Structures are given as structure tokens and as C-alpha cells.
Length: 114
Image (cartoon, rainbow, N blue to C red; front, top):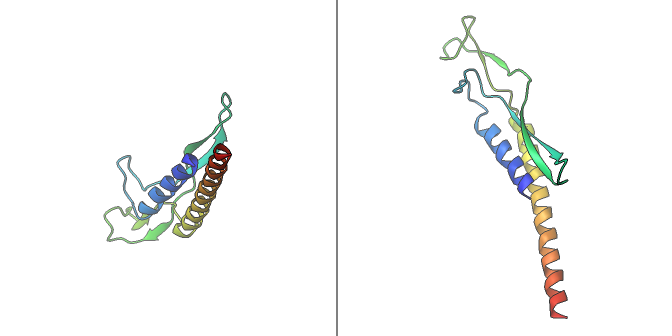
């Protein structure tokens, strides 16, 4: 469940920065991707955060403060629609895990009563 929570946090950060054209590192915000990979020692899965290497979209807006000399502004490589779909998927997985934990808790409680 913590992994799905981390996925939702990364997706929320991507959506929040979908229009950020200047970061402290310089340049537009880069989409973050959470990748699940198993821990080789313990076997538990963890979420690793990677930066999406795809370029952002270029929009002609010569009046923008971050415009290049040609008048183009590079926006983040975040597609809000696909981020929302990913968010819905992570939320459903989180809910499914919560239901499983509640069922296991209920079964253990009944086993103790026997």
C-alpha cells in the first residue's frame, strides 16, 4: 500500500507542475516516473523514481518570460490526461489492497473468537 501511495504522490506532483516552465535547476519541470522493482535482498517491492527523458512540448509565445530568442517556450513533458488515468489506477490498487487487509483482519478476528 505504501508503494501505491508513493505512486499517487509522484503523479500528483506531475499534475501540479504541468505548467511549470522554470525550475530551480533551470528549464521546465521534467515528468517523474515511479517504477516498481523488487529488493534483491529482502524481496519486498519498492518504488524507484526516475525522470522521463522525453522532451517537453514547444509552444510559440514570444511574450512569455521563459521564451527562447525564437519566441518558443518549452513546457513540461506532462500529459495531464494520462496522469489522471495513472492516478485512477493507483487509487484502485490502493483501495483493493485496503479491502484485502480488512478481510484478513476480519478473518483473524473470527479465528480468535473460535
